[in-house]
Length: 394
Ligand SMILES: [Fe+2]
Image (cartoon, rainbow, N blue to C red; front, side):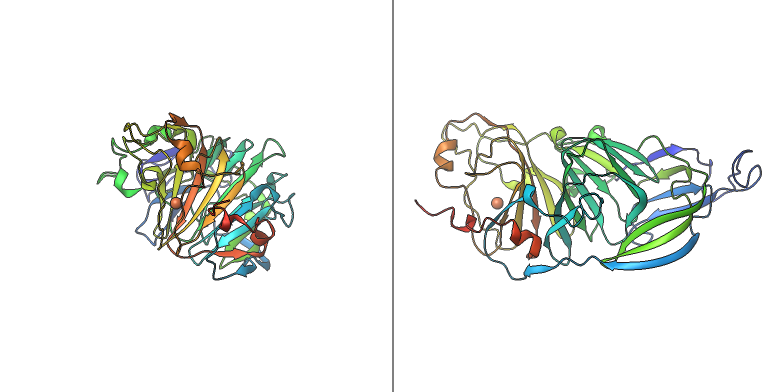
């Protein structure tokens, strides 16, 4: 996140001696272990962490499991509608096993998950990708080595690559949409000034960003199972110290939450294009939030979107809640794919139906990718198979 945050204790000067007190391993007189934790080499955002133990103590490297999604359609031109709540996980009782990959290309992976169990018996980090979790149902706590974030309905959780975390769910009724992005996930550049501050015309600002709190510092040695996703494989390692042993940190690289209900929609006298809904950017895709908003107020306005040709991108829309004005026969958890190469637009009747309406109460999340998406075997299993013909006259 492009603004500074600090938790716990840190020395007044970076890269200097930071002595442990009595009662801590190696204290008094011993030194904390400093770690620079950044992305994009030494050019991206980074944080400086102070560990009780050396963060490099790997006791064992166990096996690896290939996580490469099984592809069913590599060259897709068909519009699709998936019934997201029907997705079949490999193991709903395991956080990673509950993830069902649906769409993939070399830049990202989009999937859904309905985990029943919290992730507490091992630690996880994704070394391949930034993760974006969207919480559709359920509440819980994201626990990371940089602190905790409580989450609930409508939260986006942005977890930078390499962030060690566990996650607890308060109920077994959790529903997540997740994206693994091989390029960093940022807020849109056009909404930030030269210094990184959110500008006045941005649909959200720093006050809407929830940063980690309640830093956990575990001064423990032993065997700690760590699962690391790298190059599409899940590697199991044994760390010799508790991964959450940070006494303090500061910097710009940390997980955060932003709630879709805090997105302030930008509206106009006539229909505004999808970029006004943009919430996140990467080099290879954007994420947009469709939120309750007043409709266009020109006396002759057509609130439904016009047909458009996203010739260069594939568009995934995950329907969250409310009444989806541009579509027929859509329910929460449904996911549409409008593939590049053919135009798409409102369902038959939706344009006429929208005229004279004052507002919409829809919530939806859109992922627009610049490279075409491939469909996994799990995606085809929940594809309704007929959506591509839904624009035909009856
Ligand atoms: Fe579209």
